[in-house]
Length: 206
Image 1: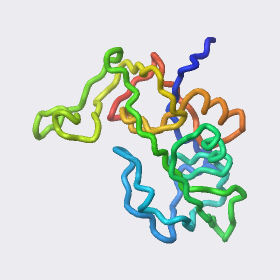
Image 2: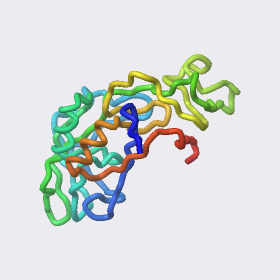
Image 3: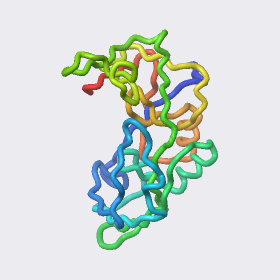
Image 4: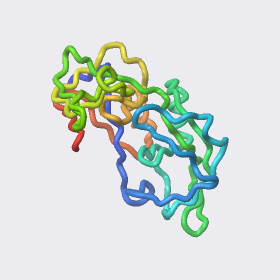
């Protein structure tokens, strides 16, 4: 099987119900500021320099808890090596019965938001605002980005150089093949990788 050196992958949560919980109730001290991640990254200046977290879990050992916006120190070292632009804030975590995870954790938000769809080579449908009948785009509705109903053929632009970023088209974290390979070589856990290739299709309703 040939390997595409320009391949990119969706980073998906891969819980095991143990050290990588399916869901984790969290109580932050102090409370986190209100933030939105789907159009643009949070403002780093809205956050404090450190937080404490009481997590309703018996174990915690995943390295990238993508749905919880938490990463281990080992994951952070990989991001530093690959020059990933991010917000990172140390978090002191207490689990059930006062147990502390062995790994150090950080609140984590990628700062790079990229539009990677090659519109000339892709097949897609832009969603429509039901009230106005206008396309959900910057041009027609003054939105921050274009919203897609579906993408049946996703051709990625050339010369994407970032290794971990938030993909505007599908509102998800995406990484390079180099990031994926190094993550797996280090034995890091918490996520799985789905390639954006000729078989990949996106639906806003999935």
